[in-house]
Length: 152
Image 1 (tube, rainbow, N blue to C red):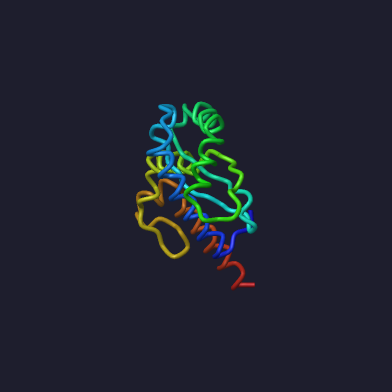
Image 2 (cartoon, rainbow, N blue to C red):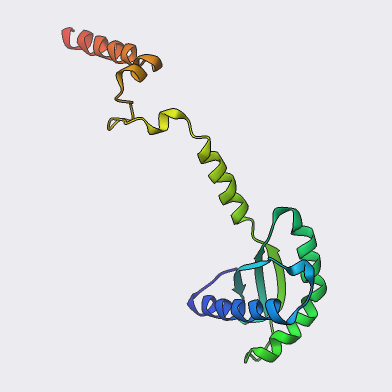
């Protein structure tokens, strides 16, 4: 959904109101430990996409709970907003935290060569590692080619 400054501001306002409603006015235990990560509001304020985050094994349960409470949430929202139209709510799972966790795990398994100091071309500076990777032989082959070109 295309967003501009006004719709971002409205989305933030809606997120605060929804957070209060979910925390204090909806008493479904399936909605414990659910975080509202973002809200996108349409330009005409008639539709809002609400992104929520929770544990990975609870996605279906949380979406089901939000779906069953959607009418109550919307009516409570209508009372707390001063908008002419109360937006239709579309709840979606925000999987960006899962992606961040996957990246963090991948970084824990970084290869040992990542910490080795490298020159401006990206080659390791440690001689034992250069020998291990065969870079000294590669450099020698390049120098031999350069010598042959200069003799011709």
